[in-house]
Image (cartoon, rainbow, N blue to C red; front, side, top):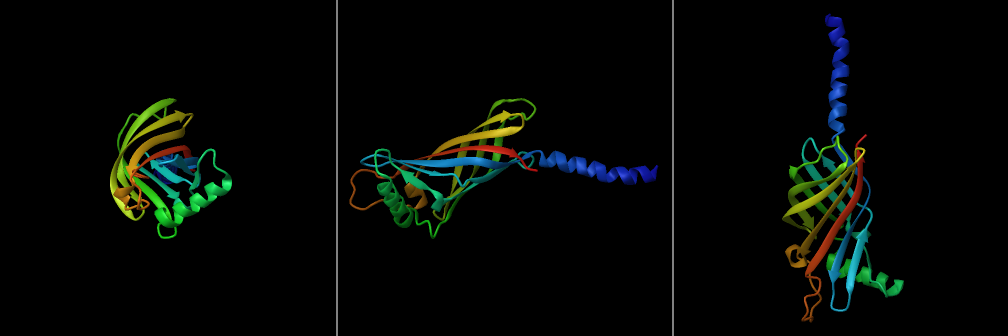
Length: 192
């Protein structure tokens, strides 16, 4: 009998391990976008180099973007103007060489996610956003769509540039870049 238990023990632990890893999801494809209202137009920056994970066992939720990967685009402007604007935003305002990443790390505080059923679920995540070298507490409302065990994750948040010590162009009377709409949209699969 002891012999059988000895052989079944590794199978038991492998089963626990695979169950735990089945609760971990990684970003396979996704993007984060920043929209800013400027005096003349709406400026949108998008980054598709998004990294992230959700661990339902540990109730963790984290994402990282490569700030230098943000490309800012304004409709009706030629590509050369958008490239020049992107370069200025990176060097003067975002200081991407000094602060190459923006991160969010948090804990899932509320969730009705049921991996056994396809559908759209809600999560509340509390954590810290680290942008431009400044960490701030953030509460996110997250929509999660479960389809056959793969997740589509969406959240939107508004932040103020002054909260993260991102300077505004001098001499402007209008609030330029004070409020930024951030949208995260990604497809996640189980960690293998």
